[in-house]
Image (spheres, helix red, strand yellow):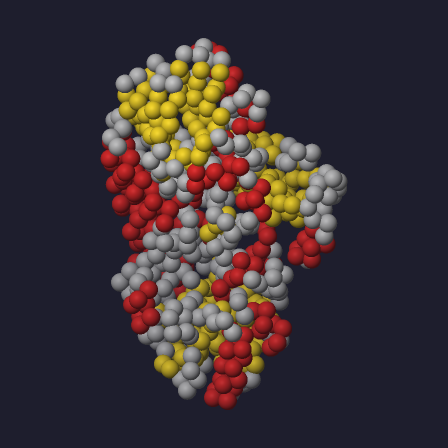
Length: 627
C-alpha cells in the first residue's frame, strides 16, 4: 500500500489514481487533487486531523473519484472556473453528447457524482490559505480548463502542474488533448501553457501523474517543449487546403454535366467547387452504375444528386445505380445512402471491417458516426459484406476488397483495372499532396494505432502499386508511388516521436483511448431489466500484464461480475462478458458506467466509461438496432 512521502517539511505526496499533494499547516491540510481518497487514512501519521480545502487541477475522474469520502468532513472545494459545471453537474454532461466532443466522440470524463464547489478560480486569481498565497493560472492543454497552482513552500517556488507533463518531458495521454479533428487546438494550447509556466520560473514541478517531485523544473519543461515542437508538424494534417483544389483534379476533365468530371471513359467523379464531395460513379457498358460513397455537402443534396443522375442518363446513358460501395463508416461519406436506398433501390456493399459501425453506431465511442450527421442509427443497411481479399465482380469489372485502415481502423480500399489503369479507391487515407504524405488528421478516436492504421495502409498501397488513387473528397492522385513512400516515411517518424512522448515503452497507451472499452458504448436498457455488455481489455505490452477492472455502476444497479482480474498475454485483447441489472425504480435518463483500472499494480483509476441509456422503450429499440 502506498505511503505518504515527504517532499519538503510541509509538503507530502500520496501516489494514488493521481498524485495527491498534502500542503500542511500544523494539524490542518490543503490537498491538491484527491484521487481515490485513500490519503485520508494516512493523514494522522503526519499529525493532520483536519482537511480544510481540496483544490482540483482539472475535472478528470481519476483526480476526484474518491470525493464522496469527504461528504461528512466539511471540506471546501476549489476548481477551475471553466470546468466548474463538469464538477457540479456531471449528469448534464452525460446527457449532452455533443459537448466536449470530437465530431460526436466525447473526450471529457467528469466525476460520477456532483461535487459542491466553493471557489471557482479564474486565470490570475490569488487564493490564500494559512501562510500560503496560491497563484491560479489557467493552463489548458491536457483539459480545456486545467489550472496550475503556484506557491512557495518552505521557501521553494513550486507549481502543482496537473497533467501538463510527466517526468522527463513525457505526456500522460495524447488523446485527452485531442479536442478537434486534426487542427491541434489542444496540443497547441498545451505547448503555450508549458511556455507560460516556464516564464513563471518554478523550481519544483508537482505533476498529477508519474514521478514527483520534478526538481530543476526548467530541464523538464524545456525537454517537453522541444518534443512538442517536433511533434506538432508531424501531427497536423499534411496537405494544404488552398492548393489542394488544384492538385486534386489532375486526373479528370469537366463534362457537359456541371459538377460531374470524367476520370476515364467508365469512371466519373461528382465534385464540388471547394474540397469536393464523396462520390464516384463507375458506369458499365450496359448503363448500370456503381457508386463509391455517397456524401454530397449541399443543403438540398438529395435533389441535387437526383438531378445529376438524370443528367448523366441523358449525357452518358446511366440507367440506374445498383449499389453504393462504402469506403469507411464516417457519416460525411454516407449522407445520401438512405436516399439512394429508398428512392433508387440501391443496395449497400462494403468490406467486413466497415460493417459494425454502420449497423450498430452505438457500439463504440467513435468520431463521425452517421447519427452525428443527422442520419438515423438504423438507416444504413448492409446488403452485401465483402470478405478480406474478396473480388467483387460487377458488370465486367473486378474490384478487390482490402482492409485499408489509416485515418480510421474501420476502412476499406477497393482495387481493380478500369479503362486500362490500376485504380484504387482509398477513402480519406490520403489527400493529393505530391511532395508530402497527404495524411488527413491523425485522430485517436478514429482508432489510430499506426501499425493497425497508416503504416498498414502504406504497406498495402505499396503492394497494390496502383496507377491512380481516388480518395474521398474528390482526391485524384495519379502516379501515387512517391506520395505513398512519403506516407510510410511520415508514419515511421511519427511513431518515433510518439514513443518519445509516451510514459510507457509501448506508445499505444499514449494514443489509445480504447485499450479499456465497454461495448456497446451506449447501452440501452429498461427499468427492471438486464442488459449484456462486453468489457474489452487490451495488453499493448511485450510481456504478460496483470489487469484488474472494477465495474462501477450507478447506485442500486448490479454488475455480474463486479470485478475482472486477468493475466493477458503480450499484444493480446481479452474480452469478458458482463450482465448489468437496472433497478425497476430507475427513472429514464443517461447514467455513467465506469471502469476502475489497475495495471500491474499501478492504480490508473476510473479513466474509462460508457453510458447507460435508460428508457421504457430501450429494449425494443436496442433489439431493432442490433437485428
